Length: 151
Image (cartoon, helix red, strand yellow):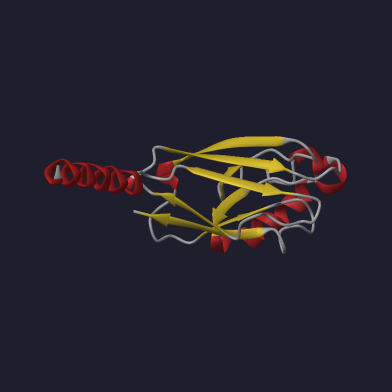
């Protein structure tokens, strides 16, 4: 009996260790009419082939009044991309077209909508400094957070 319990405990311990070692390849964020993301920091693994980005807008206001997106850049580029996004206007989704500083972004959405995007995992390096933010005018100061990339 004791041997069976010991083997079962070892098996469960091994499964738990494997589950903890599995790479995190998804960023899931929610935002509402209060101009806040539900998280200030997200963690992904550098070993991911691709990283999915999911945004849910839990508010009720339309995109023209309270639109949100998720933009990921290297941290030093975030302020410049947000400023240039305002110049791009609503028609451009408040992002400069073809801007190489934008590593990934979702489309701009309004209340009750959701959006997804994919980021090639190789664009993020472990230990690098990355920021996520909303590029709707006036939102990036409050709606921003850190992307932590683990090995």
